[in-house]
Length: 334
Image 1 (cartoon, one colour):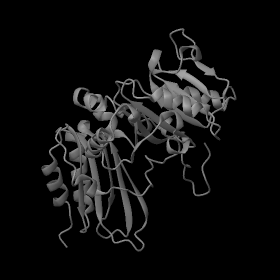
Image 2 (cartoon, rainbow, N blue to C red):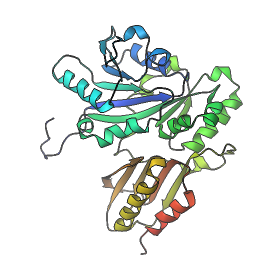
Image 3 (cartoon, helix red, strand yellow):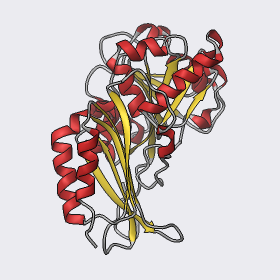
Image 4 (cartoon, rainbow, N blue to C red):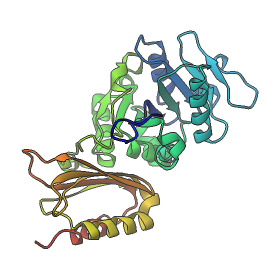
């Protein structure tokens, strides 16, 4: 990749969407919808499971290795049988050689997968991060079985916690009030994520692709009021909480605290993201993390907006009160 005139590497050119959801939620229906739509993308689809959870078997070649198949609609399909980083690198090399052509990647995870390790690949592996940009995690929840799945399957709560967009499927099979109860529960787990009941076969592609849900430079959009007024009786081990303050952070103290926090609780911190206000720094900073992987970026000035800290953490069995008190100790005394 060539560098720009400032000597800085450009943004990764290939966006990636992770499509997740529990067994039978409707991932394949949505994926088929995307592949059949007339859009500007040439999509490489990466599947990590054969059978009913993936695209129809006839689209894939079965010989026990990754296979890349050029489909009639111009999309490329391959199966995961090994390390995701290696597969993405192989796709990129083959594209550079002119053997295949794509400008977007969709990864459909198996229904019982935690999407966390997949997300981490795009931050931990330089060979991937230089060429691929994680655009967002799209999670589908089945309206008919969603409550039961969240009760019984920890992976389902992980999928909701990691989501940048949540779509509720099969709403025609339940009462409207049941959909609302499910939506309330999803909001309690992940208040930063838009949640929408949809028909998977008619969902506009622009609501799924290129949503910039994982964009470090995207302004944090969290409404803490989502957490109020929700009568949540399930006591899920995955939940969200928000830290807010008009006082600036002391940068050294915050840096030390966030490193300690991630070291101790990182495995249980599914997603965390925040806009940070630091003493003697006149620009907004953005914090973003997935499990043990944490990064920060500096944005533009605050402009007309009053400087303030806002951090949301979505995690599993986290000591909410202690973590919030820890953030408070990092605030400047002035």
